[in-house]
Every structure is written in structure tokens, then in C-alpha cells.
Image 1 (cartoon, helix red, strand yellow):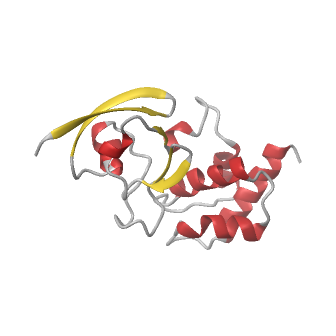
Image 2: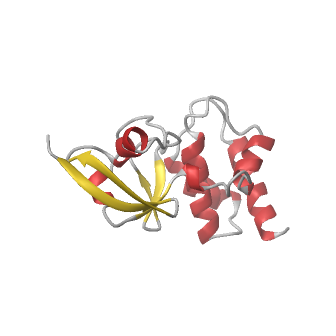
Length: 158
């Protein structure tokens, strides 16, 4: 299988990697680059555990080929915190105990961050609708939604 040289930007850093024609972005992130925060939950785009931002769009990295990252701007869960300083979403996920096994958590946080960048004051219904593409098998969704709503309020200074 031939390998393709991909030059991209991931979490603000210029990045290069080699990947096969049929290799997913998720596989490239995890196996080539050691960015293991994004998880494979379904490999079919149904669960959202592998959610990343690509050129300003929320995507399931299991549905994107690694070669499609050429020239793209990608943000993964590893780029959400600023160094040792957790993002308000990460703080509130911990505070509200909005996680159990952790497989879905990175995807929820990336998706919620995308929501709050577009709509800093969502209603609970809007937050639930936006996060509908992310599935959690362990928790009810109430703690997750509460964490997102509380992070939104903190980010607005409310």
C-alpha cells in the first residue's frame, strides 16, 4: 500500500504524517501522531466519540480519510486546554461528574466547544440538539448538559 505525505495544522502546530490511501484521520491521529484523545466508538460516524474540528466544521474523524487532512486546520481534544489550564468545559465535566468510562467525553467536549463558539448562550434544548450526534452508553445526558450549560454561563461571565 502506498503512503501519502500529508501536511496539515493540528492544534495550531504545523504537522506532517504519512498515511495509506484508505486510512482514516482518526487512525492517523492515534497511530501516526500519538493523539489518542479521540476515540473510536463505532467506526461508522454514529457515536461522535472521534469528533474533531476540521476547517471550522465538526466532523467524525472515523469518516474522514487521512489524506483529506492535507492543508486542513484540525483541532482535537488535545488542543482544548491551554497548557495546564483546563477549558471551562473540561472543568465543568469534572465538577458535574459528566463522565464515567470516558470514551465519549472527548467527542462531547469538542462538540460542545464548537457549539459555544457559535452560540455562547444556548438554551438547554439547543445544547441537546447540537450534541445529539454524540452518544454516551454510561451516563444519562443530564450531567453532560448541565456541564455544558454551566461552562457556557462561566464563559459569558454570568
